[in-house]
Image 1 (cartoon, helix red, strand yellow):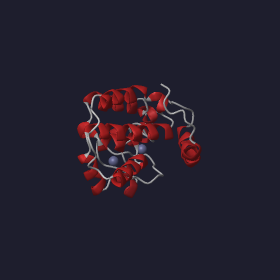
Image 2: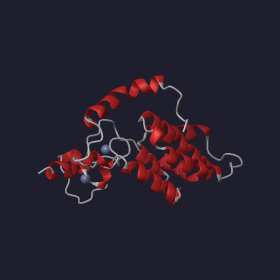
Image 3: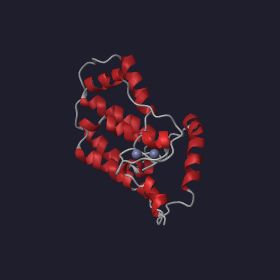
Image 4: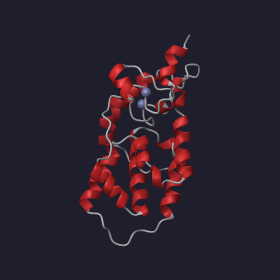
Length: 194
Ligand SMILES: [Zn+2]
Ligand SMILES: [Zn+2]
């Protein structure tokens, strides 16, 4: 029945598609099918290129003080959530991260070059929300990671054909992607009211 249609989309990695899912599955990209049970990568269509941190950026990130890490992640998440129209749904995640950020003292003096910080920040802003979280996974408290997973779960029904969230999910994705450059350019400042 509908199982064959729905099952490729219902793997864990596709949860939260298009904005909160994992990066695209290489098997799906190369062959259009994936044999991995419970595959952790997204099986849905991704039009935008996937970006991740390069070696230098990862190195810079590792050397940052905890406070700087949390501030960077918060900035990247706020921008990404706003870009993807998810700010309203992520109040609890952002709140928990702010609490976490407030618990760490500002570092004395900066060891990291300004230009490297700028480069890292720019790279994070281009990444998906899921990759943002992943880049900081080792230093994030469990409840923050859980909060992100909870947020993803609120979108996981895209693979449940019996519970349509909106009438035309594909169209709304296309619309969102089409709107993306315009919204970024004219982004109104209503990022943080919750
Ligand atoms: Zn996806
Ligand atoms: Zn896969």
